Image (cartoon, rainbow, N blue to C red; front, side):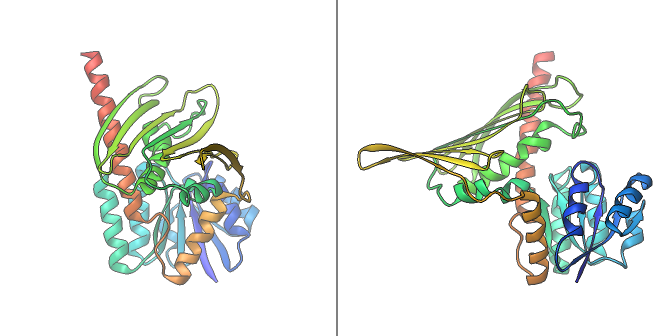
Length: 309
């Protein structure tokens, strides 16, 4: 039996608690939240202990799922790693590359699992498209959301676009040669809309657009490669493939068995702990996605500064 705790039961963390509470071979031992009343509410629902301070549970858990605001990721995760606990931390891994690097080194030295919650890697559609991508020439992603007032403590690049950055990096598998970006701050003090152009050493180009002030929710990934066009709708977990075969054009719509990505992610985390295997999204992949997201934010801010001068 693996004893786990969920640190932070906000919009995402509450679902971590729900899933862990019903997972075979796992005991949800504790819920921690800065709002003790909220922690107690979920602890009562899932029959576990409630705490306000994560340091109080070090002796009662084997692993934790961290879903606190990004600015606290490093400090909370490091506390658990130093106490020999396996860690799953929501994306982005940390606020800075230096913090991410420190967590990776700590986990590596102690032989611990450090997994980053890039949820879309466990989308059934992503699993399907990953097996069909071969030397992509151009990739286009769109991740748009109406304004919800959550995640606004960071730029949209870290809140939304980082999902697509991680997927694109995994599909292209090549170093980056150039990044260009633009965007705007509209409803918050951070970047709310961002558009990035990424060029890779192997010749592939990716274009990513993210917004948290859109009229509707859109989650799409398009991959263009020789003789084939792939269009993934993340929300439907549906993949459309248009290919040229024997001189004719054929269209095929595939919809794999729909699964809850978060549940698949948490199951994978527990399996990695049991088997001592590398996570699908390790700290290293989380850091690489963070590097690109931060660079895009930097470029957008430079553009905004130039327009205000």
